[in-house]
Length: 145
Image 1 (cartoon, rainbow, N blue to C red):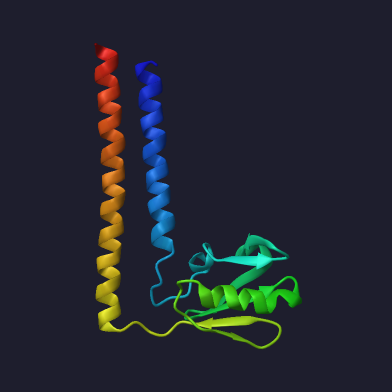
Image 2 (cartoon, one colour):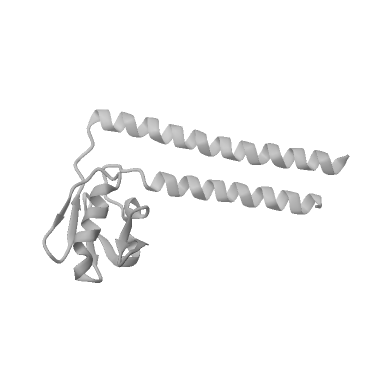
């Protein structure tokens, strides 16, 4: 392995760590409704798990409301059950055609919890980058010898 490939590999791993952190932060439920909150929700569809965004259109008609319109109307109950069993913390309402997720405004306590969660996840991201940097440095030192 050469110095250039070692550095390129380390750079690639660091970019992946940053991308993972961005994905992780996008799933945090703040006061606003964002379709990224539903990225991790999987629905049991005809016996196979499928991501929710492949089974339905997700729109944001208002800042605190997500509207999920399934492509197949018969899957609306399974989508609703998957949302209820997920860790989103919002109860879906179903009118037969669409599922609505109304997000309540944040309380002071919830804001403080969000700040702690974001700090914790940011620190995990920094640790991941430090580990990549340490491994790359060790690899370069081995190549030097």
